[in-house]
Image 1 (spheres, one colour):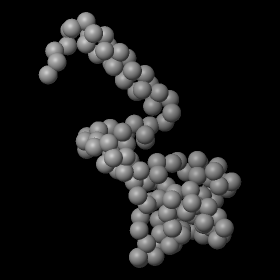
Image 2 (tube, one colour; image 1 turned 90 degrees about the vertical axis):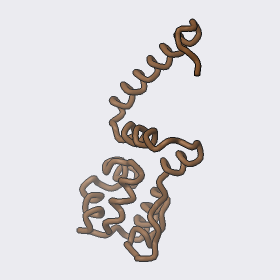
Image 3 (cartoon, helix red, strand yellow; image 1 turned 90 degrees about the horizontal axis):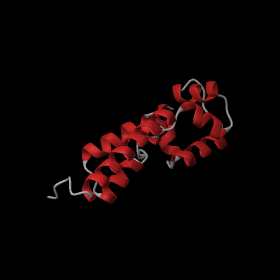
Image 4 (cartoon, one colour; image 1 turned 135 degrees about the vertical axis):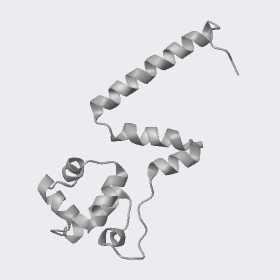
Length: 125
């Protein structure tokens, strides 16, 4: 059941988050990802629902589709450039404290840019 790990990684969730959300221990979750143990049917359905995939996908059936990447879907909708997608994915991979630090820095840069723009210091294209 290595597709459990693939689905989790694609979702951007940490192992502990998944375990907590499903009410299992971290070790149990890790054994599902490694294929050492298989989750009971009811838990398999909850895992599929959590990641928005089919149980067939989690079971590794050859005709099953992988989960859609929500970042890719969003990027298509807003016509985001590839380098912007890469930055967004890297930002989402950070822990909460580092995300906040990057966010705070971006806000400072934007405020500085807005201040320069309103004072005529930035040339318009």
